[in-house]
Image 1 (cartoon, helix red, strand yellow):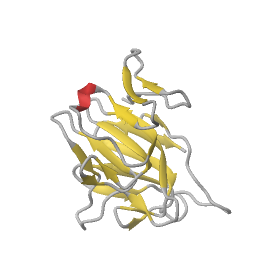
Image 2 (image 1 turned 90 degrees about the horizontal axis):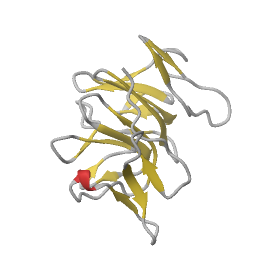
Image 3 (image 1 turned 90 degrees about the vertical axis):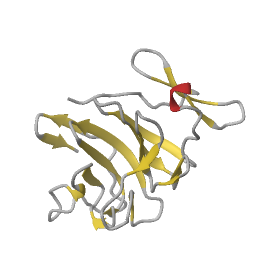
Image 4 (image 1 turned 180 degrees about the vertical axis):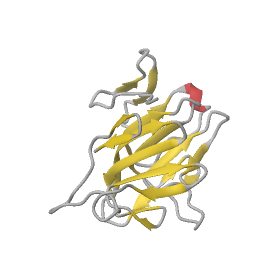
Length: 171
């Protein structure tokens, strides 16, 4: 099951599919999260992708280094019991990076797996070109393609969209 929490756009508000406001840009340009986030600060950069798991976690990706008081490289999640958490790997690394201006621009969730697309060469410190998956149990894994390390190309390759169909991931 894929759950879409919000559609990102250039408007000042980000709305859930039921029409309720998830977050909005304040008059001074700050990003303000809905009260359901218990007054916690959001991220210290921009959010480019949002998805929600069936269990209630809210995943955010973009270009940032912190979510609330947590170090989180371009991706983090809000746990329904409260608080931001990083996408950690057993090696102490979290998030995605490896290139200048690394960012997450696409998220999709299926069960316990979060699929992440964007512009990066590492996920949790492991080689992963622009697309990877993460689970609570196994941490980060690169997706197949490009020699088993994601997708590549000339110039500055980047993943802008992900779609799921049963066990297939479309990039």
